[in-house]
Amino acid sequence: MKLSRRQSLKAVSLAAALPAASSLVGKSRSAELPPVRLVVLDVGGTIIEDRGDVPTAMRAALANGGVEVTTAQIGEWRGASKLEMVRHFVSLEKMPADVDREELIASIYKDFSTRVTGMYSTVSPIAGAEEAFRLMRRSGLLLATTTGFDRELAFAIFHRLGWQEYFVATIASDDVAQGRPSPYMIFHAMESARVNSVLEVVAVGDTPLDLQAGTNAGLRGVVGVLSGASSREKLQRERHTHILPSVADLPALLRSL
Image 1: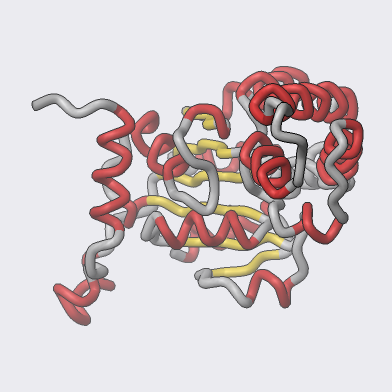
Image 2: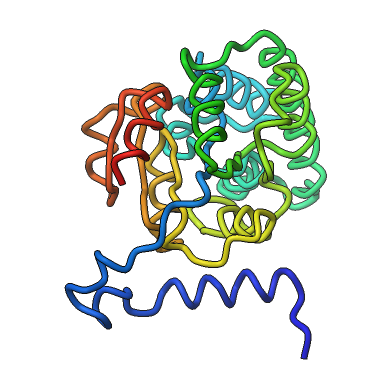
């Protein structure tokens, strides 16, 4: 029986939840690890600067729709699907019975998208990011991105920066059933890059949800960077393999693996 893409992603997720290979092969596993083939990079705060635009736009759009939230509440959702974020806060709001919540969610999300698209039209790359892409591609690594933005905004960012050539896949939140901390965007990137083993994949991000998604995927490497939304202390509370100042330090780390 042929599985759909969504069924395939769920099957991979189940496989990642099985006992780690180290529990099956013991100490010999380290000598048998395959080389890293795919690096999956978050976007905002990881390869482009985080100026606080997303929380500002989200809070304003929610308030415009009659939903009041704090900056701290939004901060807990950094790295998540932005549509899922809107849906979450609308679901918590007490409203008259005749309010169409789905219509309100769509309206708020459209408002947010308009605001953040304008903001991101001038956002700069993280210092050293593009050179890191070149070095990793030159060494034979495949690169992909995952983001809590939808495909339209992600495409606009990459088109403006001229980065399409570096990535074999650009996975957006609307490409999967569930965003972070679910691992589905990572699995979708693996599928697009034709990489079969999670032991050949390293994921990089600046938020706890980024690290949680990499951990839930069972990846070889789960790398936090300090260039975005989270402090070292906050990232260290999550399971990870490395924490770096920024993506600019990634090529040196990968050479050491």
